[in-house]
Image 1 (cartoon, rainbow, N blue to C red):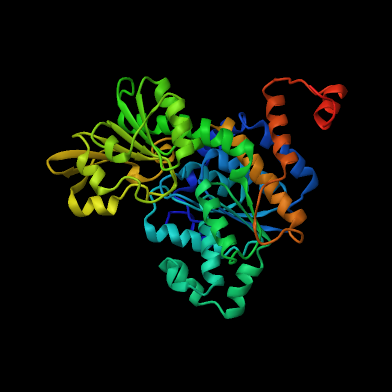
Image 2 (cartoon, rainbow, N blue to C red):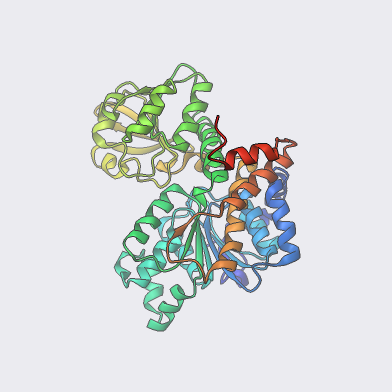
Length: 449
């Protein structure tokens, strides 16, 4: 446990409350670049659309997330926050939220596996009306409870659930009126659950909003991944061969930034359409088997498991660096690597050395999201739109819970477009509007060419 004051341990678990002042300064700095969320926060303060609702969020505990949590609280929500990644927590920000806003926070940077799931348990114990996820951890646990698959829960969560009555377990799930999901990985999981008919409540796929994935995934991931790799290694990007596994929006963004820094970029893909796009964007597209011997740096951005496997790592050159910026640390087969290699040996912060077949390989950030493990995640300006989506999605759930089916839903297009309009306004960008003649032409089928 942390050194949080004893009286606060029931409602918080953070590293050190004395870090709050630094966390406040950094959170305020981020807020300067989040004008859309600021406007939503101001409206929430007036209208209180989330009044009386308990909200449990499992997100990266960063300065940008802090501004989201404050906006949700301004809207009337009773917020509990836990970390969605053991290495992404900014301890000073966690302290700031506890001390200055009274928000329940359960997150410590570098927390071990047991503590991570104890914090998930604490968020579940908040008995939320709305959940907010970055990878479906909270929703996944709730559904294991609903389906009575307690053996699939992490031990800290399972032990707690076993102390609850059948009625209390049911209430944990039936009390949730809806959820929001931030990531591609989480949305894929949730759509699979909906397809199988096991989804217990409606979920808003924030990741499907254009103002989220077209900007957060591309420009945010692109810049922050490169930032994390450079901070962790201090390697020169120019002239190196970088293998980008996956050419979705995250992969596109990182490939673009790596090429801009002077790298020779190679792309691997399993989707023929995305592979064709990468080829026509000017990248060399090969299989991972072909890429393994030529890459200096490998970055996974797929959201899938075992993208880089032991047979690939055996074929890599001495000194190859491996990182992940997809989602969970399953994209690199680290368990397989540990069985056949010597190590890990820490050679610098966020860099571990493995020796395999006389060669040294270097894994960054324990295979977790390198942009959050070694850097600060996405710039606040791009998270402004992502978290505007989260805030509006929470409000949409409250207003429409009774009408929404137990399925995965997109945020309404008009809200998505409103976020874009507000962002452009904040940037001082003006755009044209359709004339009456143009509107008529676009709505007509018989005006000819």
